[in-house]
Image 1 (cartoon, rainbow, N blue to C red):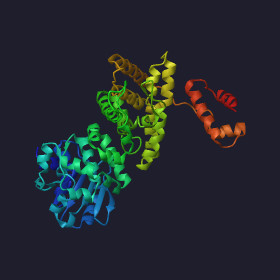
Image 2: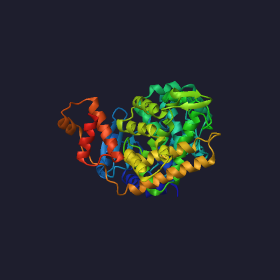
Image 3: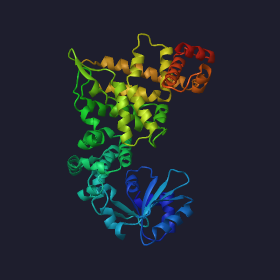
Length: 461
């Protein structure tokens, strides 16, 4: 099927080509998705020989879409269709020239345009050749100076497509990595999340070099912790390998688990995307807790330290409170599932306590524990140790999947206002501590009724 056939089979694009006679070009990601045989939801159009704003408003009316002005100065408009899945970004060519517009873009594979009326491909920079060779090549270095975020976008496209980044980009990125600080943190955040969304995120992270160190300076510390008796890789490569293992576990998981990890609960990206970022950051507390005792490397409480560190790191990159809460919880609890299954006695009460504590994050943190185990194969870690750990974690996962179908949320027996009223106390850090301990007692099954809760709080006071 050629591109004109694809356009005709696309209900939205075919409507546009049949109802407007002026020159119209599909550009950017939609062209790439057509070539990759991927579904197309986000379509970028360049409109010529007409007023682009009037065109966009008229098209919005015809498609019953919402018209959004993205950039009045540069005449960029968005149409959001009623299904909230399909989008159209519409603009006019730079300096009224399609050729100049295409040559101002980032990579050759993104500088392709398709005539909506004829299906003809306009390719001024060998983009089709690079696409077929799975290469990410720049249009020009100047375009990277104009927008340094394009350095990061190269690695994002590698993470998503598995293409090879050219030496030109790798060298430019390493030499000019500090230019990334000229970009808004929100834009960096978005590109990093797109990167971690990709199947090949681990390859991109390994290639990013100094650019990754500029975006996440903690990477420099990760590279300073060497392999040890439990880890065959240095800490940086262990962290990247953990990202890769998360992806492998997802691919092999049941549909039920995949559906959970595909859920978008916060931040506009799936749980899986956030989990892979957490996997990269899960050991950031190790450098500051690193001690060598009797020849053995120790990282006592690195999970707690790392969770606290992640809060500041993610705040600086404009992550939301819910995203930070999730990622820091993953880091803080990444050892927890393995400690559950290595208890002297593993019974239903211990596993239920884990489920009550982790709740909706149970699958996620079990996957992180699995990936962590699979990424640490030092000389003291035998295949038997690894296999037993994975088997135990799989049993914990299956226990959760079985129980979660009928498990009711823990009831709120006493809230803060109740406690203040009953015991005549005022808001204070002590009240927060009481609520936390009461919740913990409920998780353990020590407190079941409201009377239990009142008596429990009495003992604390």
